[in-house]
Amino acid sequence: MDAVRATGLTKKFGTFSAVDNVSITIPEGSIFGFLGPNGAGKTTTIRMLTGVLVPDAGSVRIFGIDVHDDPIAAKLKMGVIPENGTVYSDLSALQNILLTAKFFGMERVTREERACEILERLGLSDRQDDLVRTFSKGMRQRVSIACAIIHAPPLLILDEPTTGLDVYSRRLVIDTVRRMNREGSTVLLTTHNIEEANALCSRISVINHGTIVATESPEKLKKTFDTSRYVEISFNREVDAPLFSASCIPNAEPYGDKWRVYTDDPDRTVKSLVTLADREGLSIVSIATSNPSLEEAFVTLTAGA
Amino acid sequence: MDWHLLTKSILVTTEKNMRIYYFKGPVVVFGLLFPLIMFLTFFIGRDLDLILFFPGFLAMMLFFTASSVGPLITPWEKREKTYERLLSLPVILESIVIGDILAGAIFGAGISIIVFAACSLVLPLSVTSLPLLVLAFILGSVTFAALGTLLASPTTDNPSNIMMLSSLVRLPLMFISGIFIPLSQLTGWFFIFTSISPLTYLVDLFHAALNGDAVYPPWVDILVLIGVTLVFVWSAKVIQRRNLVKGI
Ligand SMILES: Nc1ncnc2c1ncn2[C@@H]1O[C@H](COP(=O)(O)OP(=O)(O)OP(=O)(O)O)[C@@H](O)[C@H]1O
Ligand SMILES: [Mg+2]
Image: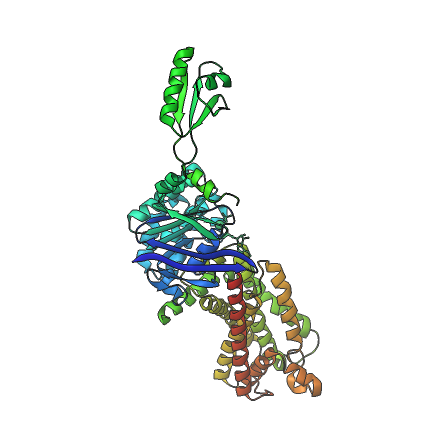
């Protein structure tokens, strides 16, 4: 069964169409990425999926349960980290987690055991009784994550979970997402960080101006939009542009202390560059070829945003 | 809709409210002090019959405490950004609305019963009908907690706007509800004027329960309070539902 099956989601705010006929299907067990520039409609879509915002049209099924018809049953299957939502700052980390667990109807013993385990896992054990008010942003986000996974949700939905976090907190979040996925949760996450989506997701939807412009695996997306390739090279002494054109290497541009040579055949270009260096008595300090990047695909898809 | 799950979500919401918004030193102290100050301001030194005015005082106390914190909860949660998370938990709008009302009702009834118990130690209060008294506490606390939740519903994440609105609605109600002049002494237009305030019927119900000198038959008071509660709850739900559609 599909973890998420949303069809024809549409939302207008006044006359502005924030989300227009968006359909998403997420098979059980996968990590699904939702990518798009600022204001593309990611959060609006997520809010409709999680039953927080009433759509103008369209329907959402979570493991077959319609969010509109039976919101409580559908929400019981989800753990959500909203983009603009935090935990209660007047409660301690532990109290927040236990309260959330109560909303999910967990038994007292399970609740306490699991809270303990998760606090440990997220490195919050020694601060568990401090009020969240006194926490840093990264720690708050960890509490937020703890609350979202306390009931081992079959579906985990995270709206920009790593924005504003340092490297360690970011890694912790990513590891937690991976681990939840290994333990059986389906994951839907939005992010601006293309590398993150690349590293985590098995499928990505790119959304722009409220409509989905592509849904592919990251590798496929990269290949499709692999248009500009180049070779980057630097020598032990300064060279100038005519040197390249003289050896039939067009499209060479200075790039910092290096040269960038745009080409559609990296293989031939590298060989000519090596010949050139040999002939001129230059030694090569560094050489690299570009790989197709997801960023390229993203920019191409959402150009003009 | 699973009733068990719905009930559970209401109770946990109530518990959350009690813990975060009500069981706080300043809130409880304010809840106790404000009606007391009102009481002293209006009654002390004016040679009034305390027993005659006590039902009105009790109703005012219940009215004020039950509707004091409710208006702030939703705006506060929106401002602190906890509302979005709350909505994504296994709750529906009704759980939140009813949970907010229950918390206010428990707080209002709790404090008023404490004050009533304390007063009955020092004043020679009489109770004409205990069942009516219990009913008055329950109905009064629920009705005015529902008013509090209704006041919380307009679109804003600014608690001070709601404070203004709340004072604007609640203070005038107190003056047209037979608290400071017994209903039995009002005639003509004044009497008709008081009949538009729901608080009047709670005052009257306390008169029936304590001194036995009510103006309306108890069943009228009870029906009006129930009817008004339904209107409050329904309006709160409609307004908050509309906010959900607007996404605010
Ligand atoms: N409640 C609302 N009322 C009016 N307009 C809204 C509302 N919520 C969102 N919008 C508009 O809808 C558009 C999409 O917003 P949304 O928050 O979904 O973008 P996003 O993809 O999540 O962007 P970001 O990456 O910046 O978080 C924006 O133009 C925003 O201004
Ligand atoms: Mg967003």
